[in-house]
Amino acid sequence: MPVSGGMSRWTVLLLLVLTLAGAVVASFAFGAKHIPFGEVVDGLLSPDGAENSLIIREERLPRTVLGIAAGTALGLAGTLMQALTRNPLAEPGLLGVNSGAALAVVLVIGLLRVDEALVYVWAALAGAAVTAVLVYLLGSSGRYGATPAKLVLAGVAVNAVAVGVTTGVMLLIPRAFNGFRFWQVGSLGGQDLGVVLRILPFLAVGLLLVALLAGPLNTLALGDEAARSLGGRPGLIRAAGGLAVVLLCGGATAAAGPLFFVGLAVPFAARALAGTDHRWILAYSALLAPVLLLGADVLGRLLGSPGELETGLVTAFLGAPLFIFIVRRGKVPQL
Image 1 (cartoon, rainbow, N blue to C red):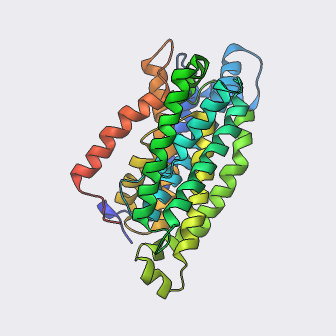
Image 2 (cartoon, rainbow, N blue to C red):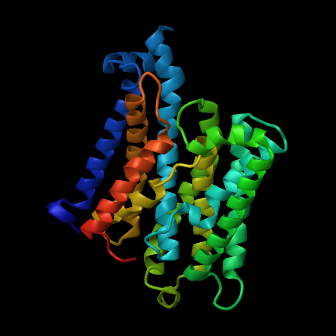
Image 3 (tube, rainbow, N blue to C red):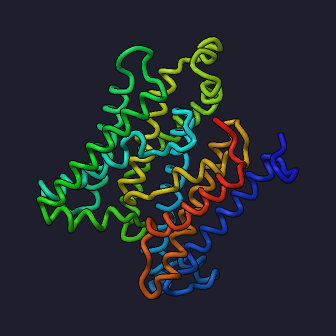
């Protein structure tokens, strides 16, 4: 089926792959110090210990890999949230994932007095999982089970409580505030490949669930009754989708901190290109999100040179206008 401009979906997919490749090259080459493409290749394939080689291997390689992994995860998590709730304004924070991860990190810093990045990863994943399960239990109680409206209401309530507790802990324990404020901004820098590798198993399981859910999401979009008549199981689809959101968004948030607007704006753009088929929407989101995240990271390095602007700040500035533009153009089909 063609998309706007007469291009096929496969053509758009190829263009997005090439765009992502360009973003990866830019992530390696540009920053406070520009490194020619030839030296980038040499630094990756045959490091010689020179300054540029160290920058490539120890700084830009981890942040580029994290940008791809976190971007893909956030894009898919946002698409899943909008599909599961049939709400085009939904984003991963709707299940309390971000607020739960943040609360867990604050408690670890403030109460346990731990400031190691690896511990943040496990704490954030645990917090995201607990809050998501709590939201699902609240949203599935009573008649009719876990309906989209009930999940949204439960998510808003749990998110408000988690944010309130997080703020209270930071006000009472200065150490928690000092440590948390750096993680809260959201950044691809300052991590090594070890942190990225530790979240990859969670992201891999999340990606597997997304692949299995791509077809059933199209059925769920017809409504619960229609989905059941076609052999679908809405409750199971939402439970599996919620688990995928926790693994994807929780892993990304744990490693890079909260990165806003990626999971909200990217699915809009993907849906504008792909139409209503969630198999294509998910594929486009998986490519568009890391392009946005890597682009924001490179832009933050260039604008903040010789320092840098944190990636989370840049995604907010880029994501908000993109979101407004797409909505005003009226190119987003209803879910």
